[in-house]
Length: 428
Ligand code: ACO
Image (cartoon, rainbow, N blue to C red):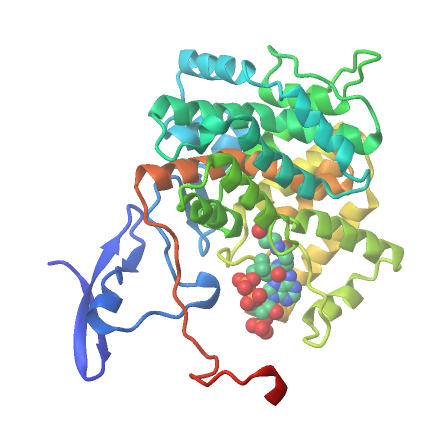
């Protein structure tokens, strides 16, 4: 028998179907609620609201589980490459060696960006935040590839837009970095793998060959894989909702980049390092800063702690913490903020305030320490998150279109003034 949920309102009871996902997650399908009852639901922050059915990523926040297309994040981070994971997320299956090679070739054909895009960099102030630049540059791709504006592209046309964006993003990101230094940009070197090519454009010099250490390439693959998708978070929901108006892929991703920027979301990685630096410069007293985080009259929050859906360890944080130790050891770096981070984590995990609220370190508590060890400046951290998240955003945008989802348009409970008559200016 199909399970239902009853809602009683205005003396009448209505039944709504309960649907179950492949991992036995239950949802009450209220799509006919307003038609049947005249009422809507109210759920600020969408804490209980499923916006879509999705086959991309499974996440169980209570158990600390994360899987892309069914594959555990631990296995992908350990054994896969970023491009392979990108293919998996976007097309649904792990590629065969031949398919992966063809995908790599397609990407290689589109790594250059239009030379006119360089003019944007001349216009940005030299100290402007890389996330503002990235959002602008990705949105601007639509001007260079107007065929992407077609709301009804063929599968091949849609695929080409996807490939172009994937291919050009590392070039854009590395050029933002180069411009911040005032250095000449490096052009892509097709034949290097996706991540190596990105690192070469970022840390390479046109004056001499710079060898990118294999440890750096491998750590970067891992970080990008760990960030590649996270189901219906703030930026992904933004991408889907913008795309639901039939806005083109570049515009939708540009909006996602803006949503990611905030310190409560992707911007946390930058905020964590700044927080750890502040604590170090303040004498390293973690107890004092924990007390501030607990004080409701103090706006300070322990950045990199807490998560909307994880009420257990974020599985990505576990992998990153270990990767952080490995990278620092292999590169022979001793970063004092790592000790502060570990001390804070240990103290918070024992503290009743954090225990009661199930606040654990999230993916970004340790990622910034690795990015820093790899040589990235702090304000580039969230851009790296965006580079990693790109395949997830694309996969979710593509799924939303394939499902022919309706335009996203929440309702509201109006709490403003009831009707009143206009009063002319001289009488106010
Ligand atoms: N430090 C101190 N207290 C916290 C923290 C924190 N980092 N996070 C949550 N709390 C407290 C809240 O004050 C609240 O306490 P209360 O019940 O006494 O009022 C309780 O825990 C629940 O927190 P909410 O803000 O209601 O939880 P929500 O799910 O809305 O927010 C969020 C989740 C935004 C991630 C929050 O935990 C936070 O601000 N963390 C710090 C920023 C951060 O690290 N963001 C990155 C998230 S991961 C990502 O997006 C990549």
